[in-house]
Length: 413
Image 1 (cartoon, rainbow, N blue to C red):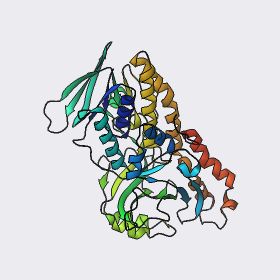
Image 2: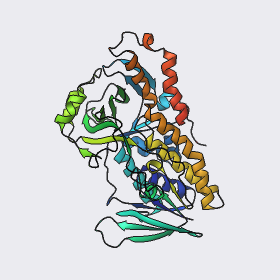
Image 3: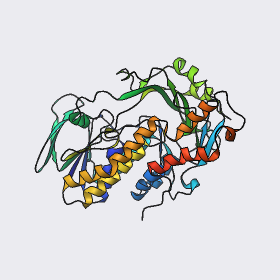
């Protein structure tokens, strides 16, 4: 069997590694001219780290990421709403990792080249179209480097793991339009700086209308400093306005635009202003997703990761769910008697699960507990239990964990 994978992001690379581990040939076609360490921080939850551990990648993850120890939810004014241990510190058999997205992608890319061969990833190849017949699927990839002649490849199945602007998804849903924007702009940055508290904790302050996220994404240096990732989310438009301006995806933003919004947040024991001022590059993104689809699979072609279920970045679930997609699809292809049956089984396993997460994230996910506290006590509080009981807060936070599949994670045997 030959599997064509459009997209060399976290989902596509992980799928290739998992297929290889099951004796299935995979080849990746990535539209970017090179796989580079771009982006900022993400969190990978234990149920996804379990899959990386099964691939033997845990030591490599330890070299470039941080095992998350504690998660703190705070109000915009710095009052603690909830805190809990994470990963192995919470009793899981595998950790949660805070990591630079580009470094994770580079780690996976290098692992693919080492295990599958130097030609397993073809860059500068943008999916331009495909046709199917009874025997397989033929995909055409445009030359994304110099615009000259592209290439045509034949495989048993085509997996579209090409992100929120997926060309494969657009073939099946040509009138869907641009992603849905909720009016929230995210400014993100990372720089080497003093860690917050123990250097292994993350904090989320404020609700969807105005949120700050702060956590380390690399091990400590000799001087004790770490690569610190921060995000400021501010609702700037009427959420009914959609889509965002077409040039607002990952563009650079000036400090003068971002700093006043960052100063709206109070972080205990930390100089947030100094961190933001020290950040050399600040990037702007719209907080966007897409409506859940009624169908991912069409014959020998299916969707994976953000191509299938792009979601708001709350609950640390985007890359984790793409990893779970990859595992489910690899298992289905290894077990099924026919590739088409495998793709349908994969969709049956994953589509509704991810749809629930997409819709829940629109309401704030587990971080919705902060929204609720700020709604009930807009002027702040002295006693959090007088605003919302511990059990009610626990139900909001840990109920999401159960829905998303990481309430308790053990190692694979």
